[in-house]
Image (cartoon, rainbow, N blue to C red; front, side):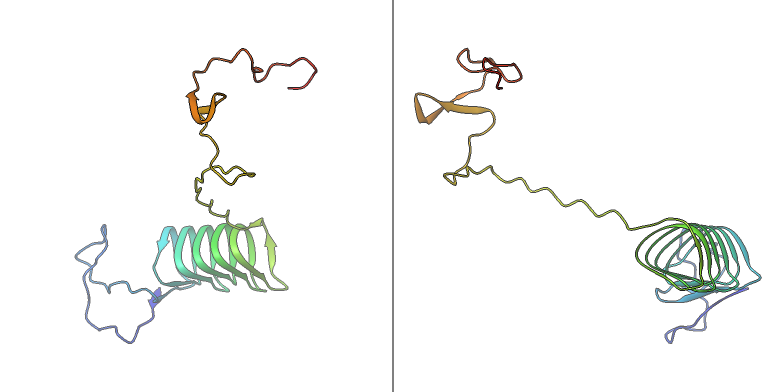
Length: 193
């Protein structure tokens, strides 16, 4: 049905399950990042498939796949969502793809919308869908004090205004309009605001 390649450090003895929801009575090997799982062509999965390593799909998956690296083989068929750092399509894909690097090989048939940083489509591939880049992360805002262009000094704070009696004193803004000053938003004599 499916196989998992052996790393050089694998032991032959069973290890207990380490993930919540796993059956403790079922021995299995502990997951190791970098391992490759192969889902054979006679396998049908409906649901979620997730691994920290690489995944090669030769069978049929109807659902969600999350892995570090995903290859949909020539016999593979995926309907659903793929999330991976790297994805390579050689078989059939229908749904949505979110990855860093996407390669669509010549034998692939893809009807998917993809969000990826890097895209390669080989000549001969059958492709239908939209491709876009991920939205850039917003830059953190850094508040800086306002500088006066002429003097290179700090401008007055918004809640104070300079006092005509002298440059070293300031009066608090009371929210009332000064009768000698124009009111913002109202037309002034002469047509200028």
